[in-house]
Length: 328
Image (cartoon, rainbow, N blue to C red):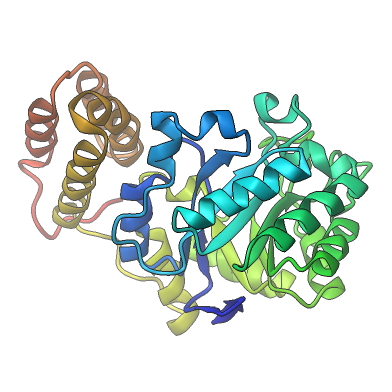
């Protein structure tokens, strides 16, 4: 357990913010599956985007339990402060600042991980956002902007001095994007350099890796991103391994079907007939592609045009599996 402001996070597993992935249905699912904290998709600081349907969906919380964390992205301190205030008014209880995204469309506007090259601007943004709201503000960064310029320790000290409540670090640089090995040495250095909670992120794909990273870095928690796509069970698996030192039994095919079916229904309800069908395709693909016959199934599933067809198709895939059969 660790704290972010007044909020006690009950375990060491956090769902990373991912654009196009961590919508309300997926956040709710990951909470049920053991995530101690979940973070929304990135919301742009530009106020001209806030009235769009996409932005409105990104800041819907439903019956999500506290604390509700929303990630904002931008490069202008005034706009970022205003974005923080707006999202708190909409129900956010933690504001997370994106300085970790390596995507070109984000970095070309000097936002995301591109900001790591400008420590003075980082300080201005963090100070403005922390001053603008009465909720905890967290920060997500990378180890630096390239391998010759790993400045995460400097950024972390700026963040702590500005009043940031917790810091998540992806163990690659901006230039690395998602290619190559993650290095955790810089994360360990940051942990030693600041007193706020530090959360380790990057290629943590199973309980054993989570334990290894926590021990090596002494981080307060691990943040799970891509490894949770199609595998929301990973949070309980890590929690169980941390508590008992033993692997949790893999889910049965029956459990897989019921989790996927509930997720599919939630996506249909949240996005509607057209949007729900479209968004569901990638999520069901992430679940099923690793299974025997999965890729053939998803090729057909991706051609279906109605929610009813998708539900029937998913049910049909699992016919013939025994309730006790486990995912390989």
